[in-house]
Length: 344
Image (spheres, rainbow, N blue to C red):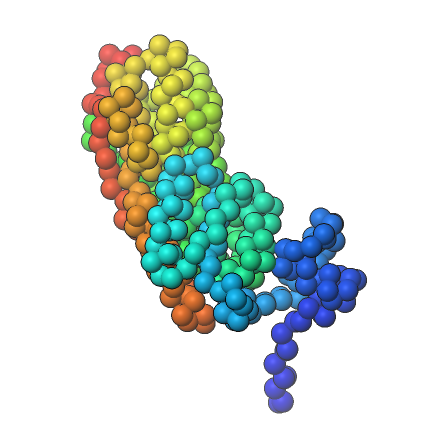
């Protein structure tokens, strides 16, 4: 049986024919340059995806006078942890001989993809994606364009290097802490589709089940924002037959919104409601907030992300790496022993 000859890689000419445009227009759209209409750009990018077009962007960068740049894309610049990772990663990139080009307008998949196309046009050698894009198909798509390391999600089923905190363990640490304080009605405000949210939710479930608290599991839909925390507090505290004595919030911003709303309706934290957050942003450790939380090390995440990027650029065909950074519990005044009087 004769073997089929290997299929040749798709070229810009192939994409142009597939999309019904000129080769020069296809090139502009792929590079994120020029006055290409959104509809035409979308058609060209869809053709590139359909043909599995993989430009050799590392070689292009090294051949360019502008070589020596790394792109950094931040999904939620309002998230203090993501902002700190970006800042630290920029400094670490400099130490490796790269200047960082940072894009902070990536709070949707469409914006993230556009930001990465723009960075490609500036001849970056690779992209450190911090929490964006959000959906796995979009992550896989942009990872096919340029060497990328994703910070903030494990991405087991996507062939891209990733660095994240061990969020399952983080969720377990939060629940174990609250159970040790005597709490049983422990709710979780999740982070929706945000990076790490699914694994934090999984950790919460596992720990509740391990403690025999399956019937006490309550998960409220949320996001990594103060407003989402406030909405979750109203939903939780309005339940007539089940009110939690403790809440594990998916991140510190969510926890702050939840605490604000609980206090607004007359509850005390932790007297009536213990709260544990996630991230350990700078504000969490202040005397005013004193939030118990799961600490993520921005320094460790940034360092591991840049190290993974350097390894990828040095060996483009190396096996994909999945790096987990261990979290740790920070106990402060927002969590306290269960009070039967407060829960009554």
